[in-house]
Image (cartoon, rainbow, N blue to C red; front, side, top):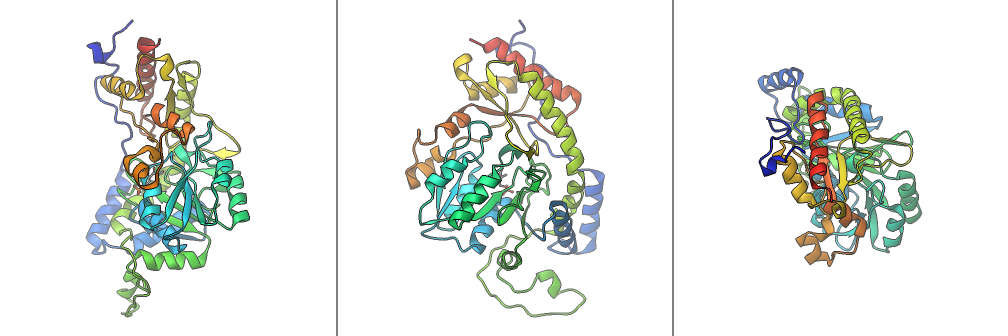
Length: 397
Ligand SMILES: *Cc1c(COP(=O)(O)O)cnc(C)c1O
């Protein structure tokens, strides 16, 4: 048996496979150069075009480009008037930003456990957590697998709750033919470097509700009642007024220059992501020491992350050691996510404890995200498979 690289053996590959590296093509670079030379590098015509093209892609009436998904989630809560005394139900199996923004608004994040199969928020547990203070539900379509949105919308409608979809993993996601982000009141997307499309940093808020988008547009830029780029356009100078103590969440034309071309590539990239995802599923389906991701319901999966769960009782290592051993084989990987309710702040501030959400905790301790990107070649995919098999062969009990 070939020895592990961590014990002095030969690594599976010579160069390190980065977990998820973005790719910027000439189209983006040329657009960017043109923007830089145009004299308009702030929020301007390219942001407007990017919003229109993203709205058209999602089949939604309104889109507002922002400087991050975190900004969009925060803005979403603000335009829905969610604040002190209110509760927002969300999942502890997410990136910290999802819950942090609830705290920023002065509201309380109420976590409920996830489904064992999809790792998405469990609708039945949402129902049980509703109080007279509950104002909204923030589901996260984890890894690109849609939440059970029919259940969630039914609960929201019965209890008069808003739904803000965290679509950071879900640009291409659908549930029963409906596009993620258009099912709830608001959908918010991330264009962070490792997401399915990137603008360096960036986000997008979408909705069919005209009142909400008007509020969002105003609050996202200082609370000014007119867009800055319109004020200085050829149509002449218009004075502005401040109607709200707004935020500074706008996207720039520099970012939109990337987004316009990244969006054009997202559907074709999904075909490649899908192919790699299925290769992984096939290669790992018979390995007893790990669980592969499961799918449920009539969904379209965005294939954002490929997450395996190791079964520590069948291996002579824990998850963190597994990641370190893989790294020595020159395969990068990630953790999505440690259980958020067991982090120092949420335990201290809201009295969350270990043991409260056992499915989230099991996933949080055992999940590993393998490299998954449309820019991986066949060798990258094979090396990843061979490396996982090698680690398991060496460490199975
Ligand atoms: C990446 C991510 C965010 C934050 O996105 P930013 O654009 O970096 O602010 C929020 N929620 C989830 C689930 C994410 O993965």
